[in-house]
Image (tube, rainbow, N blue to C red; front, side, top):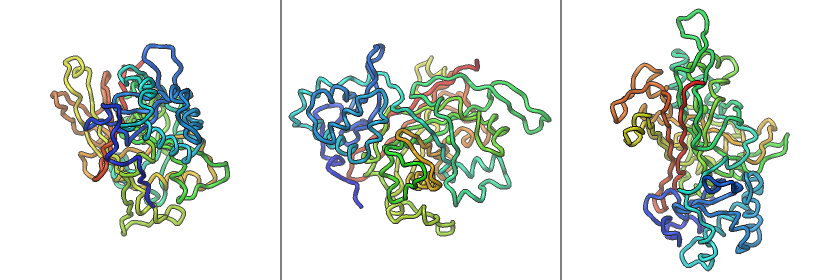
Amino acid sequence: MSFINETHDINLKSWVASANQAGTDFPIQNLPFAVFRRKGTNEEFRGGVAIGDQVLDLAAVAQTGIFSGDAQVAVEAANAQVLNEFMGLGQTYWSALRLALSRALREGSEHQTTLANALVPQADVEYSMPCHIGDYTDFYTSIYHATAVGKLFRPDNPLLPNYKWVPIGYHGRSSSIDVSGQAFHRPKGQTKAPDADTPSFGPCKRLDYELELGIYLGKGNELGDQIAIENAENHVFGFCLFNDWSARDLQAWEYQPLGPFLAKNFASTVSPWIVTTEALAPYRTQWHRDENDPQPMEYLESSHNREAGAFDIQMDVLLETAKMREEQQPAAKLSESSFKHSYWTVAQMVTHHTVNGCNFLPGDMLGSGTQSGPEHEEAGSLLELSRGGKESITLTNGEERKFLEDGDKVIMRGWCEADGFNRIGFGSVEGTVLPAK
Ligand code: CA
């Protein structure tokens, strides 16, 4: 099965000059979606597509009438304060709009003059949540993260026996998910030191980030129906960067027996741009399960999933402390990893989530779980990098961290590269820790 089409051609250039610059996150082969308006105005938020350093205003495009058929239906649906309706239209419409946008933004397009008026510089816009996330489920798909964290919480029994059989997840909370730029107060709660007899109450002392991808569902399924693995990716609209902020001391006390609760639901941050599954086609890669491990049950197995079910999405995390900001120093890089290490694929997550008949709605989001790679330096959380708070990490300016301090800003970035294709990027997701209220 080939997912590559003319929109992925490395030779495509755009009449938007900044889209042709080496290293841009948003060349014409990407075309991710967000919801935006001009900064500091009362304009309605509406859908937009990134091209170079510009946003193509889909409300303005819809009014020009240059598209027709499915592409016009899609662009009209994307002219809204949330993209749920557009996401619910399904693959045929998403692809029609992507192709129409790709052709209209190419060098030599007859629509250049018309669309030039629909561009807004990214520097002049603000974003809101790209869709209403009705439900959010966080998975746990990095076996390296699960093992490292398991060791800290349960030294004798790091990886629980269900891990290699079940794509583990928990139902999270969507009300506290916000778009990049989120600033939140350090959470307070109950914690209990290992040597204490009783818990105490106060501000979290072990605040952490988690380097994840967010996976947005497009067309949903009826309650009671399952999504077969062969069909799972047709339901996946696209991917964003996702920071699942975590209060480790609250988590350690509250997590048994029902899993994460208040350690996770005080804030979570998504990047503004959703990179579509179609845009990611060139960066797909084989998925395999070690022959010594249990092989997936039949409902989680398919040849397509083996051949191309994984995505090589590279990600990194940077930390900008208050001192760095004051002294205008660059943020310090903490780690780098890739989603290709995931123990379970997106298709397996979607299929497993619906195997009991649970229904998805357009705009629902899955967290990938912290994407730690096989090496210690590739860990996607401070909990792992500081070995449970035992070792300080020295930043580029000499400051040290075991966990996050007030004023810290965490920045995550994502990008994809493959031979014979252009590099595409996700932009970034940023969030800042404020003192406890
Ligand atoms: Ca998580």
